[in-house]
Image (cartoon, rainbow, N blue to C red):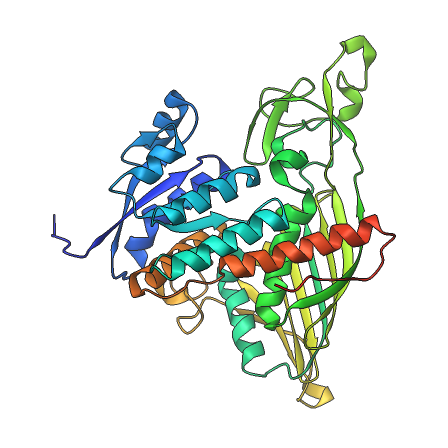
Length: 417
């Protein structure tokens, strides 16, 4: 084996479910495709169950397993703590890690409340003064087409921005028989579609435009207010008293919850939103419309954004993630119209590290790009982006949306940081 004399960077990750698996994939692959100044070492994985954590560590490529995140933070071979747990534990783990001198990358949304996010941002500011850095993991910034959209807006190719239309559409809980997983419980998740996927589209819109949302008027709705209790869940699938063992929810009309003859089923209350709609105004004057729902039947992971400006427009849909549509409004009308750009050329963001032009990337690559940028920033001693302050700003938008929806959709300013 060829010797690698680069300094090592020990990684400890907390959580090994859906996000833990994709982060593990990123840590495993980043060094094979990007020339990093340090060599990431997957030192330890943290989880609650000794047996399950050890099995996940073995399968995902981690050298050791810990059943207490405090022990993981305390390890001498861990310099970075990667947080892939539900939102209710983000603040405690992140603050403890930063105070222990460990760099932190934390899944989105940053926290379950503005107060928690404020505490995390304050801890990150204090840690930065000691050379310790933190980043919130909004991976869609690292889609090559999204990064290219940001570049074109920053270059002025759209001129003055007028409109932003942003959606994140999924359908994975549209079946009323789908069980009550943690993402549907406010105590664990903080909010529903709003925080889970709305946070992504808010950050993506602010990233592409370079502008901040200053105020919103909102509606939220919970379509299914009671669900069968979950027996087991993983990622976006689950099993419960009304679901088959393969994790598919099936037809609610045939389940025990809707059929008394099939027997009583224990249920619980859904206390988060299923969908959120809001309009808003950006700091540069553009108007925005936003939608986040997990009830858009037929849409699996449609993060969509269109930006219209005085000189042109662009449009993106994650379900066609290697494409960016662009309209140059400075052309004569006879030549104008949207054209499709396949974002796989070596000149495009991140693409040179991967495959020949036209060979598309996938969801997992966004996390590899995220880890690459984070590692490079930590090695250079500079602040990675998006920062915890950026995550706090998104949290303030989420809070303004909830406040507006609870107050008859009254236009609600986003609190200043």
